[in-house]
Length: 118
Image 1 (cartoon, rainbow, N blue to C red):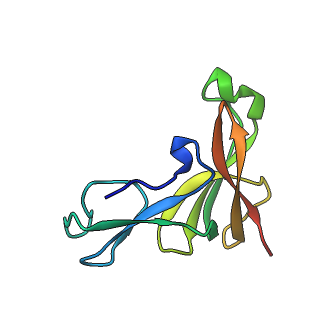
Image 2: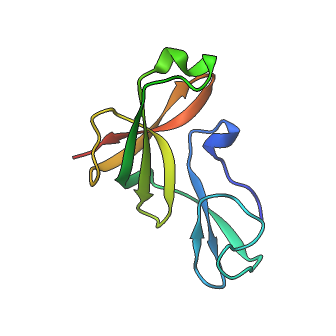
Image 3: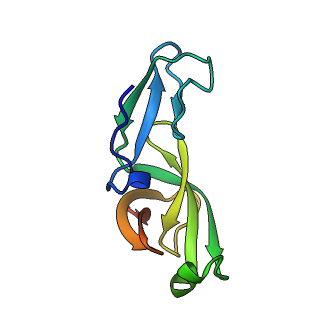
């Protein structure tokens, strides 16, 4: 299994894995399928499109590096490919909004940031 470009490694991309045995989709990289245990995983690039599942406005900085960003919105996004991920997003997002990702600097890293598409 070769690892694909991923925002956690500095690339402006969201990647996920799909199991060749049971078709389970998983966002967090593992060496095995979390559903069936198979080692037959393939890497895929996500479209960056999804729907807001939940949103939470952060009003207190967790670290000195995040202080400059307060308040900021953390969202759970149901991605079009079938997995859910946590990311940053516009403050006015609501449950059910259709969104797309771009990548922005945040506390010394580049992170996915979701904004409403319609």
